[in-house]
Image 1 (cartoon, rainbow, N blue to C red):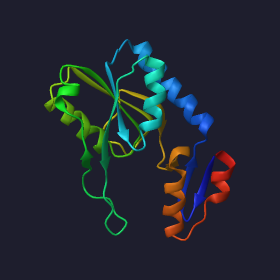
Image 2: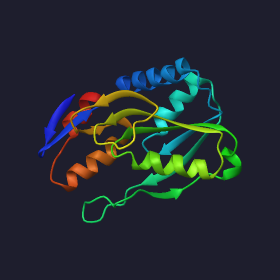
Image 3: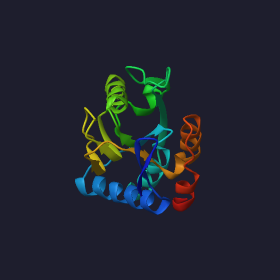
Length: 180
């Protein structure tokens, strides 16, 4: 469901849509022949898709990293900040699939892939539910390409989105209730 909230176009993704997209993304990875030994979830947005994709791929080894753009006066920093990483001994020499929910600028995925390469992974590939036209990096796998910029609200981030829109004076409760 696409709506406009305070001049911002917002796409609300329901739980069934998110599950379907995650499963379809997992099938794309399977069909490609890539067999990751580790699924690396980008916390927090990539946690749910990574869990579903790991099931589709039959990969039990799921690890996380946390990367965030720190907001200063409601602006993103120029680059993402890694604030929880993974040990090189865990990923070194392994095939890793990095999973996040969205590639908005591509900077988060680039940071993680660069870090994994320094750690000596055998191969790192990336997968997201949505890749936006604003992303400088095209993930190896994605469920949907978004041509026109839109804020995407996933069901697992509904409380965060409710808080953030409320801070700006907008109540999105009626939209959240329709999809969750």
